[in-house]
Amino acid sequence: MTKSRDISSASRKKAKKQAEPNGQSQQTARKSRKGSRRLGELIGQSLTPLCRKQGFASADIVQFWAEIVGPQFANCTEPDKIRWPRRGQGDGFHPGTLVVHCEGAQSLFFHHESVNIIQRVNAYFGYPAIDKIQILQRPVRPRRAIQPPPLRAMTKQEEQSLNQQLEGVNNDRMAAALKRLGHAIAVKG
Image (cartoon, rainbow, N blue to C red):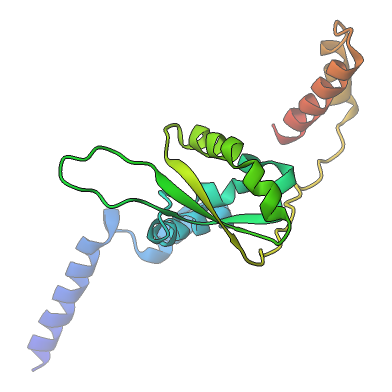
């Protein structure tokens, strides 16, 4: 019996090593990844199948909804799903209907802007994906404003270098915008 146990344990170890990439164990593979991954990267990948059930090709429309509809409707609306028409034989592509949740009185204003919003959504997709919007008056979950982390202060050398590069800019607003951009690049780079 001891020989059969030794053979089976040896064969298991051999099979395990073959299953591991390059003979590395899982712990070694985990240690070789440096740094952490953003939560958005992990969640975005897991939300895509759920969004497909709702008719969205990916989670991007939900994530960028505020940018698509603008600040007027960002906090009072949210996309629910896209209803695609049934396809018959030989039928080509037919645009779908975007179902949007909207809060109370804002639905009237949203309805008046629906033509513009359809154009924005189609521009986002890059093709005429929707041709109608169905508005459902329902409460909308409040969105949190995502604030980027504050930038560290520039060193004197970085600030002098940036000021030298901006000497030829005559427009004050342009110089201020370029200075903010240069600050972000210098600090992150």
